[in-house]
Image (tube, rainbow, N blue to C red):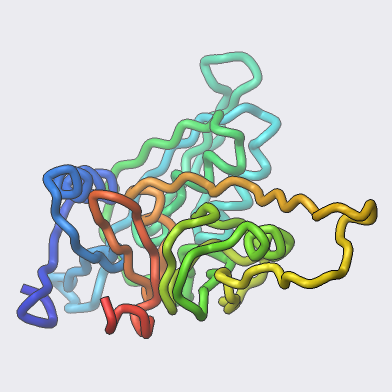
Amino acid sequence: PGETAESFKVKGRGTLQLGILMENMRREGFEFMVGAPQVLYRKDPETGKKQEPYEEAVVEVPSEFQGAVMDEFNKKSGVLKSMDSGSVANTMVLTFTIPTSCLIGMQGKMVAKTKGQAVLNSRVSHWDEVLQSDVKVREKGSIVTMAAGKATTYSLMNIQARGSTFINAGDEVYEGMCIGVSNKEFDMECNITKEKAVNNTRAGGYGGPSVSRAAGASGMSIEDFLGHMEIDELLEITPGPLRLCKKNAKGLKSR
């Protein structure tokens, strides 16, 4: 049981196993909401201090992306243990020790930073004292809509300069729903349902109507969202779309 009678705490071996369970429930027609994944702690049997699991992460990556991988692990308090040449020419095998809590979402970052060419494997190595520094899952904030309705091409086109989005034009949104990732470190509110004003002013510079082209949504799976969401966010899983929102979203009360 969880904090309320309608909530449960589900334990599993990493986000992959939890993601498979959620996907199976989704295909069976269930609708539910999940919070951000958290690691399990324990007390040291000798000292009684709080401990968290640490993992040995091994990354095989082309040499050209070696610096990007090391930079990402340094941001997450990873410690480089060894660096060797890979079995394939022009590749490196990097071994890190990193807290499990900091490894959440790292798979997606490796794909983005290395254009999908990195291979990340990890296993639990030992228990140690809890990391004191506050390490966030991601460095950028969310784009949160402050209005309910349907997303418009006009608004999506205007928001492109401020971040990337999870939704397409015509998708239903509600107040407090996270529709994308901001370029800034903090959350940004917007009205993604705003339509272009209709007046007698000519647009496009040639007397005809201007053509709005919005970039396509970045496809996100359940596992991608689990590695992306912060502690103050919830993932709404339905047989149809996946929706990310803030825990205090006003739109949740009317759903």
